[in-house]
Image 1 (cartoon, helix red, strand yellow):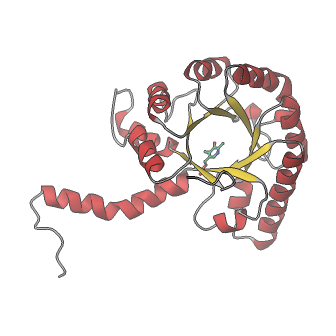
Image 2: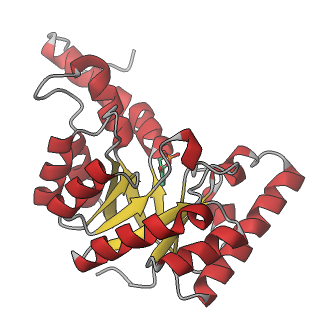
Image 3: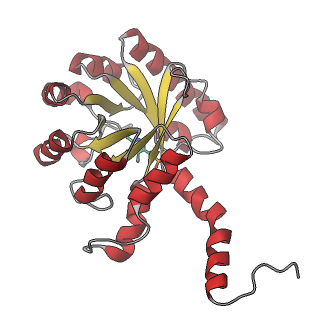
Length: 254
Ligand code: PXP
């Protein structure tokens, strides 16, 4: 059983779909299959799966979200822009939670998160519709006091703190310390406003230990580093399987 206070992992599988689309765009199926990937993540303990249905459908497709909804036993976190078409799909498919993210340049603050402070009326409306449909809401925001305050006004259940600047500056001592401080302050502020705190973007096997100094974290959404590592650690098996099919006698020690 999972300890409810344990930090949870949501694996972002968009990158698997990106690879599939590079070869199989416009086709009904192709490899690698993000659904298969999601089930593997779940089978080894990931507490959730994250997918972003973008307006341009550059990676995850509508059918992927529908299938994920059917097969996942954990939590489906659907990332979306606050636009009518995608909001309607989410209300129909009913993920467990939606994370509202910026998609168009105009919606992006300098820090790269959602400008909840400027858009709170329309975000509040979407938040209400989602909650009425039994879907929790998270807002992907920069660790900025104004944005945290706006997220509370929107009434979202979660914020997802954007860790991109922290990750970008990880190897610059002073900047990293400053970004970590911003994340800690934002997490404390969010917690005091009764918002639950997730974090994501750019988290990897190197920066995770430091990031964990941020208090009140419930879930981390991680994609690129996990899928990248899977390619590296899985390549030997993939090559061995192909060699076997080609009639090679298997591994030798020579
Ligand atoms: N959280 C959000 C809101 C995202 O949009 C993404 C994907 O950019 C991630 C987390 C995962 O980021 P990464 O692929 O860098 O781990």
